[in-house]
Image (cartoon, rainbow, N blue to C red):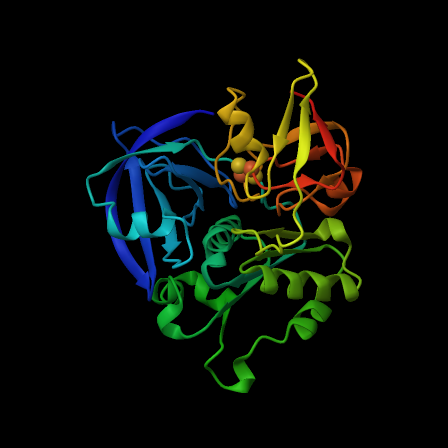
Length: 318
Ligand code: FES
């Protein structure tokens, strides 16, 4: 994957527990172009790689803007960004990639929950610049936890954005079924936020008859998994016939890496898709949020950073 060096030119507090970084190329040249919904991998220098959505208008060629929520349960990614990265630091990032692109639509309906604002804000900027029809619903716990609140209110975006606060009065709360009833053929829906939020909006849309291909969502963390019934299983490497036992508590990628078989990984949580590997035999126990439901059902690929096996053996196309 292509990487580049960028310089931190600004670090700001966007809301309670949310800090943003503004990144520019370290040699002053324009940055590689990106499309709305794209993300970068940020190499944190301590061996961790994390994905962050780009929040700014894709027509900006001189900067990438990311925003990071401090998560107490994180394995070091968000606290490293909050506490260790300083203005002037040179960071390594990947070139932007997009698994959550906008598609041409008569109307785009954007839903953001909490830090899920990051790709959604970029989409809103793009749709505004393009003069496209859209509206955005932005749900947070309170004004203090609402990243980019002042920015949105003071920009032309404000007339398209509806804020919904958990702590606010009943009239301003988001009525998902009502909003999804107002739009249908030709509209596309985009959702990003906590798993429960995505699940609620998407399942309501499906119940209201929205076609699956008009519903788009992006997770930024896999939901917690019940691992209490995990069993050990075997993995066979198709090209060599070698077999490895994957014990409870270890991932396929970690066991294979220990034996000199490297599968590229980034998030190690089933979010980014970097590690996707073809399955030639056996049935995976999918634990990612990257593959679609139909890809899961076809059982011919898996994310070995987090997924396991329902069968005693998985044969991988390696
Ligand atoms: S490394 Fe991101 S899905 Fe496996």
